[in-house]
Length: 374
Image 1 (spheres, rainbow, N blue to C red):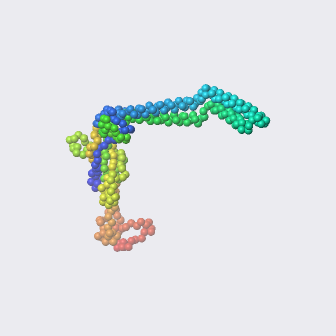
Image 2 (cartoon, rainbow, N blue to C red):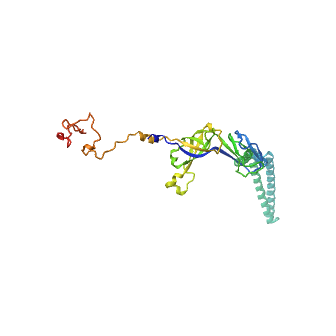
Image 3 (cartoon, rainbow, N blue to C red):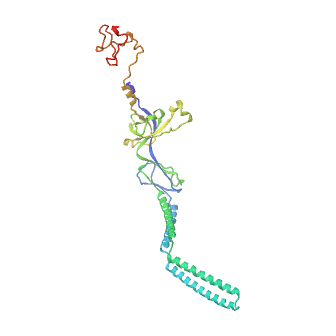
């Protein structure tokens, strides 16, 4: 029973890992400078490498020119037409009015001559058409002058504002892209790998620098299926580096489970039932403490979990019920396990043990076999 209270710790195998950050290439540009090396510890904001910025700078300059153009166009819309344009429209209106007066006078003369048959009908019709055209030109000149005097519409100004905002957004995008060409460390950490060399042109999205970040490493272990239901987030564990031995100086490290997967890492169809279920494994991550901050990634390890056998302890503390004798109640002397105690009531004549009735004394009836000392 005592051995059930002290179970051997259950273990899972895995490797030591650090949180990894991959810095992708924002554009397909040539690497012109690398300022760090693999294994170097860097601080947040430190420059790692530089991509060729010439093409992006040219695009930024073009975008800034578009911004200036749209800004000037918006100012022109907000200020309205120039005074010279308004004066020119007024002069055009005066000229149109003069042409209309001359056309009307010519039409009246030809109409008078036509009544005396001194002018042909075609000449009179041409004069009438010229008069109508001159009047239309007067109306057009009046509307044009009125449009200039009232200024631009609100909708035109809003369109100008939208065009300026679009141009500014494109310029800002190019400016941000230009800043991304200088790769900086997003967090404190260690440069794990630099896949490309100086002069390489990495494709868009390729990892230029891989960093190991975080204050402490974590253990990535594979939990066997029989112990998966007992491991929860927050469970404590003891980490031992595999192959380290007692003379390595590594020792053991304490940690707590920060993540455990609900799905097995590999699930063939025949492993969902039967005896093969015990072969499934679940990935779990155990966060280590500050004493493991100097450990490198990739070390094989063993994680031991100690579970409190609460259910077994409660079961062991609960008294077991007395075994039931199948011969009990038969009335034979051999079925008795011992002599009655001194406080038990006995018959005064035969000395036999009396059985207490659960009924009151007034309602109790003598049991058969105990009457008259029998």
